[in-house]
Image (cartoon, rainbow, N blue to C red):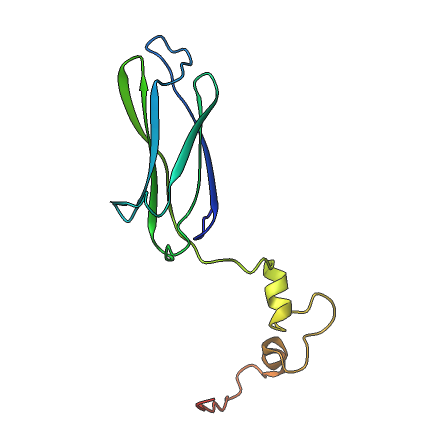
Length: 143
């Protein structure tokens, strides 16, 4: 799953005692790192304990995070007097998507209409009109 700046985050983690049973921590915190530096001031995370040994980490990614930024979510919890530190997630900030399917993109660009022949003026129509082996004149313009 990809994330973008401003997205809501939600992760679950489980803490266990020395005997392998679920146990709630006596202390817990989560930090967000962006490009290796603590970014908690911009992306504060909240840790709740909805059930024994179950932690829920929530927050909102920094709205000014940039595409390509590396994000790491790190949880620290103290269980039975032992401090446990784990990376819960690591991901890159991605570009927003268009929401179009591959065919939708082709339709929007008039490349391959869903039904019938290629649309007039489309790249597909121009390609269909080319005669194999014939020379092609290319004109380069600034517009």
